[in-house]
Length: 246
Image 1 (tube, rainbow, N blue to C red):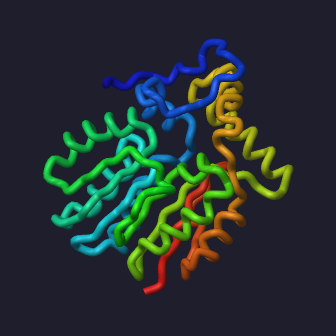
Image 2 (cartoon, helix red, strand yellow):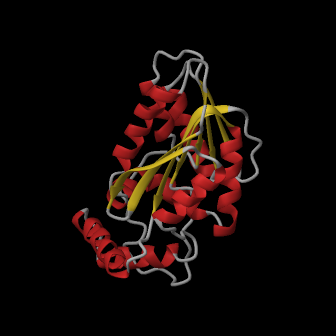
């Protein structure tokens, strides 16, 4: 599959159309992410740097909601010397997994890399050293989020890390509105029209539901993480690192 510019919402669509990670989205996904998610590449590249600090030789890393495998590529690049590293990517989209398999087989031909199409809430996680959870929790039902974080905490070995990146909303309504509007300005600056912005927003309603940073931090601490830090924020997109005590 060749990738194309994102024009999925450039023409009028059915007002009841819902966003899904189907083959159409996969085809434009790299362009969509670049133009829609502020700081995406920085978050992924730094996740690889963090993994280098916390993942030992022979370690196991999960990327939940792995999409096209960019997070696993960043980790593998930073842990190039770790010959026995095990990389596991999980995504509910069969189209994503199919394309990610091709990408990773070409880029990491000698790596132990497993990709599976599955619901991250039902996977039997093996003991691991790092988990990437980038822009995935926000697509799960809010009532399922704490239980997943608790399961991930249990799977991590002592000293392991979880990277959680999410779109957020803020408690202060004025500040929340400002970041909301600035994000739309960011999209316009990257070539999206008002029609595209409005139609994608409508398609994501009830599909992507955000939390506040306070809720995210509280959820991580309640699961048992000994250190939680909101290390990155760009407009209303943020990333946390959570460490399990040794």
